[in-house]
Each structure stands twice: as C-alpha cells, then as structure tokens.
Amino acid sequence: MAVDQVKSQLVFVHGIGRPRDPEAELAEWKRALADGARAAGYAEEISALTMDWSADAAFAHYGDLFYADDAQGAGGPEEWDEEQGAITLGLLAEFVEELLELPEHSGNRALSRIRAQLGPDEQAQGVGNVARTVAAGVAALAAVPGLNVGLRALSRQKLLSIVSQPGRYLHRRQPDAAGRTLDQRVRDRVLACLDPARPAIVVAHSLGTVVALEALAEYPGAVPLFVTLGAPITTHAVVWPLLRPRPPATPEAVEAWADFRDSDDLVVPKRRLAKAMAPNSRGVQPLSDRMESATLWPHDATTYLRRAEVAEPVMRTLVALAAPR
Image (cartoon, rainbow, N blue to C red):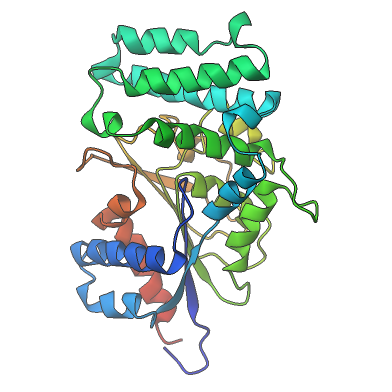
C-alpha cells in the first residue's frame, strides 16, 4: 500500500441474536472468512486480512439494543402493540409458507395446519390473541415431525427471535430519551463503524442485511462492495413493503453488490433480490448466487463466510483496494 494511500474498511453487520462480544465476534468472522479465502485461492493474502493490514475491520454490534429495550418492558410478546404483533405474525406465517414450498414439505399436513392457524382470521385479532397465536405457532413448528434436523434443533426462543427481532426493527417505535427509535439506533451502530473518507466493504448477515441496506441509503461514502448473506429482504408480506426508502433500490454508495443464499436456508425467501431491487444511478443491482447446502443449519454467518464463493469477491476487492496507485 502506498504511503499516501487511504486504508480501506471491512465492516461486518450481524443478524438476530443475543448481545455479543464484538471483539470475539470480529475475530470469529475473520477466521471464517480466512477459511473461505484459503478455499478461494487467496492463501497468501490471509495474513493481511486477519492482521488488518489490507483493511481496518470492525464488527457493527447492535444486539444489545433489543435487550436494553426488553429491560424497559418493550420486548416480549406480552408487550407488543397491535402493529408489532401483526408484523411478527406475518413474518412467522411467511416462514411457514417457505417451508411448505419446499418439495419435501409440500404435503406436510402439520405445517399446513399451522399456516392456517396463523390467520389472519377473527381469532387472531387483538394484541393478546396475536401474541398467543405467535407463541403457539412457534411451539407447534418446533414440534413438527419430518422437518430437517437443523430446524428441529432450534429452540422455541430461537424461532421467536427469528421473527420477533426483525418485527421490532421494522416496527420503527421504542424511542429512547432523545427520541430516536430502535431502528434508528440500530442503524447508528452500523454508521458509527464507517468512515466516509475511506472506501468500505460491508458484509451483512440476516437481519443485518436489512439494517445495512437502510443505513447505506443515507451513507455519503464509497462502498466498493456490499455483500449480503442469508438476506430476508424480499420477504414479500412483511419486510419488503416496510423497507425505507421506497421504492427499495441499491444505495447510491454501493458500487457492486454480491448476494448469497443457500438453497436450504429457510430464512431466505425464494424471490430473488436481483429481480426485485431497483438499480442505483450507476446501474448497480445485486448479483445473487444460490449455493447448495453443506450443513444442517446453513443460515449461520460463519457458515456462509467459510464458502469460497463468498470469500472470493471480498478478497478480490480487498486486494484491489490495497494495491498501490
């Protein structure tokens, strides 16, 4: 890297889950990406990645914000308002619909019964009924025989998190003392890791893809590469119509967008980002790459990062940005 050359940034954005140790998570995600880099033929560049020689790496952590609000009595189903309940119920219903569209579950009567019970109907009206319907649906889903081992291994709490945290983000409520809503505070965490004076590669996973997409829409810096892993962005009944700004489009800052979805990742809708997302003024749209599953539960971020297909564009861009000019 030339002496007067600006050093790049590599920013990871996580998905749902409990509060994390950002330093430990950053190290784990970089190790996973290093495994993918080795598989992609970038063994000689791994030290530059792990030692932050090619780019300053950061882990945008926001998971604690969900639990800080929980402590104020704003997180569990018993505290939902009608809109929050409707969003969460819709996400769970679409999750079950995605299962039913898989060939191995197309005739699953238990799943069909759960989908029917998720409404909407008269019994699911009212905040209390919606919360009970979601809780019952999650419990029933976790008990369905015939689902793949990875899904059965998820706890009821994990399943509830999958649908409730995106719902709380998209609800755009729960202001803090300064009046900033939960979704604003989450995006602030991502933007705080970015320096507009330096080019950035942003790698986002799951709910983090929604967060990063919206954060980058207001970001003035350059993003040579945006990578999305296991993105629920095109969830048509709930996520897609609630995205901001509208209509959904590639952020102006993004110069290239690589989207990866495992064929067995149940969180990812079948509707492809490449067909749904409008281009920015540069004509940039997401390039979606569908991969075959190599694990029982392929949605984990580190599972994606260990894939050569994912690591290749990240490493290629890192190398290009670090090259002397």
